[in-house]
Image 1: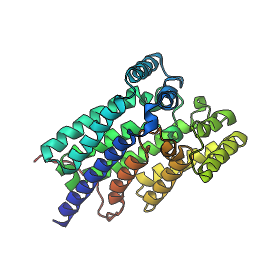
Image 2: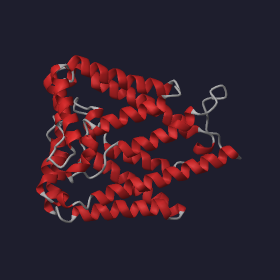
Image 3: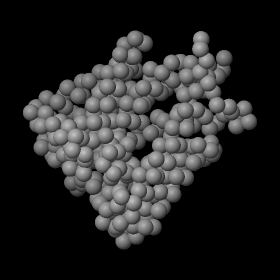
Length: 308
């Protein structure tokens, strides 16, 4: 009974967290600068120019053209969709929550493709430091948790699989970071990753200095810097897979540092960021997966879903 109660509590907290995540994203679409041409040049255009496959490039360019057809209208429509969905997920009845979740998942897939270029997974230049595998994809996966069967929560299936998924995700990100073809072992390319963040002077001086330090360090010592990045990502992934008791703390620390420095806090200081970045869905995933770390390891077995 206590286990079932804790599962219901964890599921409820997750649902509220997902609602807050979407509400923040929707409100951020109302920033005045998002109506300006800077939003296209600094946010929408770069993914289309990042050595994308021809089909993906044309898709991104078509999305940019569609945005430019009504740049003053789209932010309000998107804000209404995301905030409305957030309110329903948080306070709506079960059927309405399910419908809202499906709508937001579909919207996440659209954003992942037409706005983020599928997180740069298909162009050989993907890096967690620049948002791979894609913020929209992470938002969609987080929203999917809201509509998964209660049985998955009660029998510990979800937290087990989420912990495993986090582990393999970090290992995959380490693999992308270490790919020879990505160029991250060379100073100019790795420095470019840190320098991709658009800063307009509104950021705190400590953040600007931290990013500049990252650019200089990666430019002058690319082998050391990239090797450290690969190893730390591998360490986080293995820690989750091995159920190391400090996996949660290590993962939070590394995720936060990546979000703050190379991603400049998701660009929130610029007034152009449509979301705070990957930090919120990652925190949701880690908070759920942490439940699998605190189980008695001697009693831990791979859970299975049984037919009712």
